Image (cartoon, rainbow, N blue to C red; front, side, top):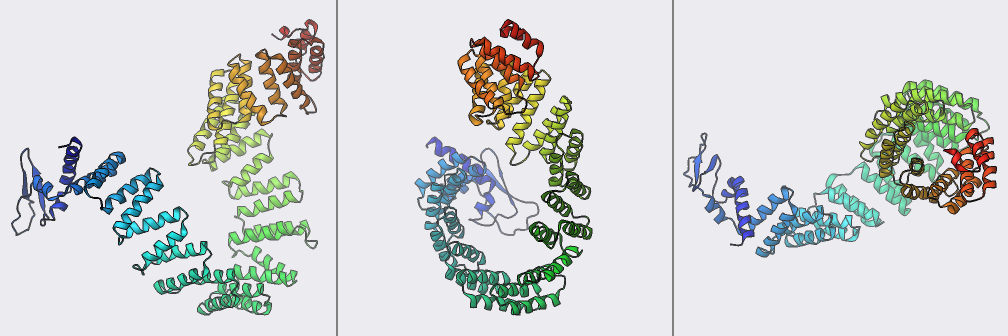
Length: 613
C-alpha cells in the first residue's frame, strides 16, 4: 500500500474512533454503548444504564472501516486537518479524494473555503461554482456563489443567481432585501418596485417599504405615486405626527403651501413639543417671509428643556453660526440666546463648545473663548475637543498646558495625544526623565489601538531622542530615533535632528548625509535643514558642495534675527573653502547675532576654524 494512502487510512481510523457511534448508526442504533479496544480486538459493552432490550452485535474497528468508503475516510481526514489548521495537508488529501470520486460537491466546497482563506478568490470561486453545479439544490452552495458575484461587482450575475434561488425559497424575505439593494444600485426602479411588492406579500406591508417606494417615485419623478404613497402612510397612521409633517414638507416643496400648513397644524395638535413638527413649521414661516414667527418657534425649541440634545445642538449651530449676517440680530443678542439655551440644558457640553466657536468667529477676546471651553470641561471633563482646543490656545504657557494635559491623561487615558502634550510641557520645563516616562506611557497607549497613529508614535519617539540628547545619552537617543523612523520613515524633523546629532558626535556621517538629504528634498527652502546638510558636507570635507547649500540656508533664513549658528557654520565653510575674508565677515556677523563672542573672536584673529575646538 502506498505510504501516503496508508497514513491517511491510519489517521482516518483515529477520527472514525472519535465519531464511531454516528457511523455505526448506519448499521443500527448504538445509543448507550461504549466502544472499548485492546491490542487485538474491539469489544462492545452495554453502558450501565442501558435499557436497550434488543441484542446488538459487537462492532469492530475493521468492520467500521470496511463499511466506510475510501472517499469518505479521506474526506473525513481532510475535514479534520482543515479544522486543525493544516490547510496544506487538507488540500493534498482532497486532491486524492478527487481521483477517487470526481463528482463529490462537498469536496469542491471544502476546497473553495481553503482557497478563500488563502485569498485566492479566483480559484475559490471556480470550486464553489463546481460544487453548486453538482448539487444545484444545495442552499449553502448557491448563496455562496451569489455572494461571490456581489463581492466581485458582477451584479447582473448575482441577480440572476438570487432570482433563480428565490423561485424555490419564496419565504426568504432576506433574499428579496438583497435583490432590492441590487436593483436600486443598478437604477432598475421597475424591478425594485416589483421586489417591494413581493416583500409585502412575504412579510406584510411595512413603513420602511413605503418610504423606499416614496424615494423611488421621487427619483423617477412620479409625483402622483409619491403623493398617493405618502397619503396612504398618513391615513394608516392617523396619530403619528411625523408622517403628517413628511407629507406637509412634501407639499411645501411642491408649492402647495396652504395644504402643507394644514398638515403642520394637525401634527402640532397631536404633539405640541414634537421637534420635527416645530422645525418644519419654523422653516415654513421662514420660507414664507415671516422671520419673526420662525425665530419664535426656534427659540421656543432652544429654550425648552424637552428638546432632545442632538436637535438642540443642531438648531443652535444653524441659528447662531449660520445667521451671523442678519442685521436684526447683533452679537449681543446672539450671545444672550446661546446663554439662555445653555441655561435650559446646563449639563450639555456641546452648547458651550458652540459658544466658544461663535465667540472666536466674531473676534471676542481669547479669555472669553477660553472661558467657554473651560465651562465645557466643568460639565464634561472628558470632552476631548474642549481640552485639546484649550491646550493649543494656551500653548507656551507651560504650567497651564501641563495641568490640562495631566487631567486629560486621567479623564481620557485612552487618548495618547494628552500624554504627548504633557511630555512637551515637562520637556520645556527641563524635567526630562519625567518627559521620557510620560512619552513611553503614551507610546504604549497609542500602540494598543487597533489602528495606531503612526505619525504620533513617531513624534513621541523623536522627542525621546531629543530628551536623551539633552541628557547626553547619545546611544539611547539614537535608538529612539531609529524607533521613530520605523513608525514613520519620512519624519522630517526627526531625520534632521538625528542627522545633526550624528554629525555632531562624529558618528556615521554617510548615514547622516543620507537622512539630511531627505529633509532638503522634502523642504528645499528650510534654512535649518539646509544648514544641517551643509554642515554634514563640511564634515565630509566636500567644501564646495557645502558652500552652495550654506548659501541657500542664508538666503532662506527669513527670521527677524538671523541664526548665529547658521552664520557661524557659513564662516567655517568659507574658511575651509579658502575665502578667509568672507569667513571673517560672517564670523563678525555671528557675533552681532548673539554667537559665542570669545570663540568667534579667536576665529577672526587666527582666520582659522581650529579656534572653535
